[in-house]
Length: 473
Image (cartoon, rainbow, N blue to C red; front, side, top):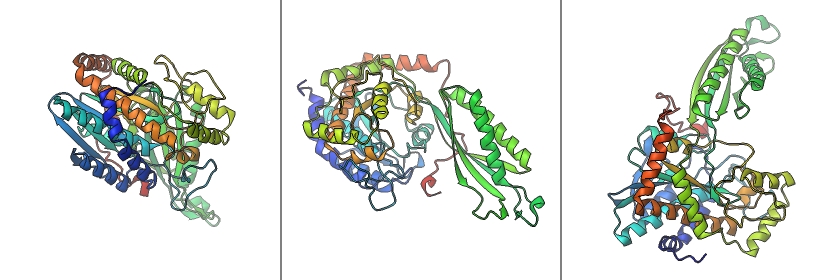
């Protein structure tokens, strides 16, 4: 379709700025809560584009909010910019070539996520000003989506209390409205304390904290047979007690990530895991203490907003990739398995087409994907205010999330075209909500109907603060 809608022209006018921002953030990958330079880049662009800027949102140094406009409804557009460890990769090559440095990389496309959302917010700002519209648009720069639950802390602090609706997106293989399905989760550190001793001369005097962690892991593994099939439990050793086998380890720490389809199921599962930890301590005559690190809610759908976003996608059509983009995508696909490619289609509820390298459709609104489900702190925003989320095609079909292949495509023509395309979808959805009060009213009514039976309760305990030093632990 011809790009004739006014808001899309405002997106095109600032597209190069956003692409430059995405590329700069790709080149400075920073982990959970350590996104100092990335946040500074977003802050500078907000100031450059004339937003009123609020820093340190919710007491988080790498969270920022920019607002424009006066009066009227408040439309929030959410961005992210955190990277992942171990996914460093040279851009634009279809072979694994890690870059020198700390090994981090944008293997989930968050360099694009923040830039496209800021582009959409800037376009809506210009549209509001040029047309004299009473409305406000806000860009929320949100750190630490990868395990830090920053949006949950932001919601808990009241950062969204006066927001009427929120819009977000995520890089994907296909363009479509995100199916509002995700797992609630929490991260809990279990610290065991025993008594160190000489492992040969006086083993009877020792009480092994490492044994306690291992027994806890065994207990949780046996529990897996007796928990809901859509729940997930993962763990990682943070402290195995030392490297000397001739010492009975007096301390040990393990971090558990527990997921369930909703908060009710999560709380039930957490209680069971805690009992197993207590049992492991009892068996080993050690003590155990716990610390919640982060927690997020499951996503809440909003039918009116999803329909409005899908209508924008249909008017705009799919991204217009060129032959160079398709050639690079085919090179990336050569590094993937047939199952990787088939799984991408199934994840979006589509028929498998093994000869297709890039998205050329809009995923039907009634398509239901199959396969594993992850978690996102957008879930907490969706419980607080009506929220809708897009999936924007920015990489070759079959590219696994959290992979070097995704990092490799982060500065490609595919990524750049997809970034601008999804910014138009988000900006168009925001404009629809502003000019059609009945849409916003319907979205709020839908949200109320979904939350009346189970009002939102933040899963983060009140005494848990944002783990600002999480990436440096």
